[in-house]
Every structure is written in C-alpha cells, then in structure tokens.
Length: 289
Image 1: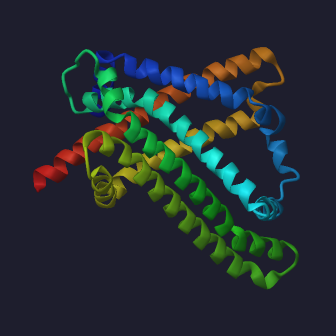
Image 2: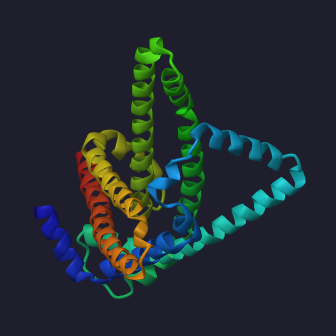
Image 3: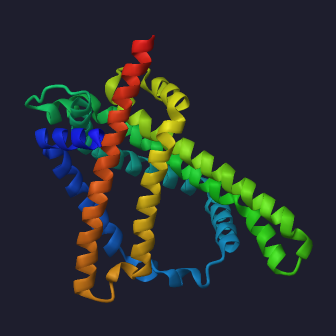
C-alpha cells in the first residue's frame, strides 16, 4: 500500500509520466483493434481450423523458398534490418526522455526543467540499440519456443488418435515442456525488462548489473512480472471473446476506450514497479558492497 501511495505521489509531481504513457497506449490499442488482421481473425473462431504443426511446417518451407535466391534474400533481410533499426531510433527518441523522467522519479530526484530533453540527448541511441537487440532476440526466442512445443503436441495427437499407452509419456512430456517454456520465457522477460532501467542508470556495465539483480532477486521479481503478463493476456482473451466489439461501431468504441484505460493503468503501475524495484535493488546491492 505504501508503494502505491508513493506511485501516486510521484505521478502527481510529474503528471507527464502518466499522460505520455496514456497517449502511447492509446495509439498501440487503436492499431491493435483496427488493423486488417484483427478485423479478419481476432476471435475464437480463428482456432476452428487452426493446425499448429502445419503452420510451422509452412513457415519452414517458406524460409527455404526464401533463401533459394540468396542475393534477393540478403538484400531483403538488410532492408528489413534497416527499417527495424529506423523504427527503434524513433522509439528511442520517444522513450528516452520518458524513462529518464521515470528514473528520476523513482530515485526521488528533485524535478527539474528539461528532464525529457536531457533524456533524449543522453539515451536515444542507447535505447535504440536496446530496442533493436530486444526485437531480434524476442523473435528468436518466440521461434525457439514454438518449435520446442512440437514433440509435446505430436504426443498429444498420437494419444487422441488411439495410442492409449501414450497417456503417461504424454502427460510427462507436456509437463516438462510447459515448465521449461514457462521459466525460459519468464527469465528472458525479466532480463530484458531490467536491462532497461540499468542502461538509464549506468553509463557502462548496466547489462551486467541487471543480470546480477535478476539472478539475485528473481523470486521477488518473478511473481509481479507474471501477474502483469496474466493481466495483459486476460485482457486480450476477453477482447478476442467479443471480437473487439467490431460487430457494432458503438460497441467497438466503448471497448477501445475501456481497454485503453485499463491497459494504461496496468502499464503505468508495472513500469513504475520495474524502476522502483530497480532503485531499491541498486541501493541494496551497492550499499552492501
């Protein structure tokens, strides 16, 4: 409760923190709801003819076909990398000032004029590289997780096709896969998340400090991070259940506003927790040394 009061107190001192995140969250929510893919597929009916193995096999064949013309493939990859990096520079430009303000707030530094501008000057390219590397690594982790689940899914298929002796191996394989994927995803999320405040606080060596913090405080940080993911996933499940209200213009607008408001609050509380927890761990770690 004390932490929540501190969050509100610091937000009142720097109202731009909440307003900035509200604007960014609205843009992201609007794009999510009104893009063509969502309008065509984002409902539970999408899973009626969903074939997990066929989709992954199709991805492999598409990749093989893509590299049959190496020159075109590498030019395409190079162009994609440039576009992604340009996008990351824009994100770095937008968020560098915001995260500088949030860091100052959680470390209880006095409010100064030009905090946002100072953040842009100091952290734009650091955050651009952070976003770029995070996007590449996240794509690789997602692909690895998707393909790691294939043995468990094939085992389940074999069981439902009549292999009664597969029950115990299927349960064990699904359990081991679920546990391995859970911890891999959660620890990856923790490392990526806490590198962010670390590169704001340290000119050099921030990544190493973040790794040490996550390793040392993981059982404190993991439940909060898991809660955030569960809430955000729950919101998306509800949105899919009603297909974002797109059957009616008025319903779609109401759902857009409601999901935007809830996500803004959840995002702000989580971002604040990350930077506040980081400030506490930093003090504890370096005071003890």
